Image (tube, rainbow, N blue to C red; front, side, top):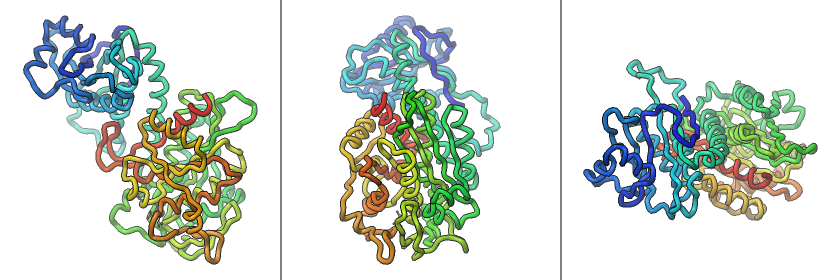
Length: 502
Ligand code: BES
Ligand code: ZN
Ligand code: ZN
């Protein structure tokens, strides 16, 4: 069940729980103080009789309300000294509040948004909106393949109201955040979906079913159309599978201008990466359903833009294929064609992502002449080795684009780290009997992969490549996301689009 969130000056719903803030050393916020007075000091008494909760940033605790009071309980959350609070802290606190609500079996809650003059880095309505966003993001569930629990009473947290004088300003912030949350959930759903259900053809259909009604134009290229348009390299990667490749192009025309001059986003969509003839070892191979995380982020972004009716022009393209060994699969040492005309010697069929992306990059640039292109791909294990799961390595050929991405990253709680593009990495990908090869040397695998892609950027177009291999997926729950799929990229790209055009 998804949570419905509303905003009111004073609470309109019948809720079982009130959520209120507390500062360092258990100084009560105005709404906590109100409740404390109305209950004859229940909150201050409860806080005095324990020593664990002290109002530190991110702490939460539950206080039971007196009998016959309008709420059954109060959930207190710590804001610390408030002066150094950032939007990202508020979201993580929201995530913790959600877990506390879940533990207490809460169904409906009111979050009191105080007028708060101690805040310096966020203002009070923004704080409330980000706390609500944290609650929403952490509430995500993927349980469609689980049997319903017989003992399950059906009670689940489903309703949040943000109340206070600041509520209408908070709603404005949340309108933008909430659309991003829906895009993130869509991306997580797609990545969590198993590969026997999500393969190129079904993925393409899901995109159409979900995005068309929202006003996104969706075009699907099947076998014939892909051949005709020249997606040769992409085709080679997927031709060995019973589930044949697809390309999906999505257009959001929100600027109102006659001429479509979009920003472009490209996603790697390998619905399962066995490695192909260079078969992967058993350990970790089951994770390879995540190899369409880039495509999921692009699709999630398009949903977000449509939901918030972004006043921008954006085109998204996802290259979908399954990388599987068979009698018909491409082999190591094959020389293949790309749409751009360059030939590639395949030295490892497991380095397939770049062979799919290169054709989509060429197509989108030639067809739409975009302002800039950003591609997202779970491209290399080397990226995970370099930066782990916290930061997404980002290769950018243009400082202005990087600066915009850096800002978008800070606004969205999705961390990006700039990585080097260099002639030397590119040179490592030069071919022996062909123009290029798909495998570099032993070291710097994320950088040589980016170097390979750079060969397909035309006219010095501003371009960024985000290797999300480490960030698309978590092996343990995080403050804002239950494992495994994260939906990484949707939020940062949404802020990037906003920064460029709105
Ligand atoms: N999909 C993988 C990269 C990957 C690995 C993503 C782990 C997420 C987690 C990619 O197609 C791949 O297999 N890359 C190879 C490249 C190598 C053969 C040059 C790799 O990283 O080992
Ligand atoms: Zn691979
Ligand atoms: Zn892959």
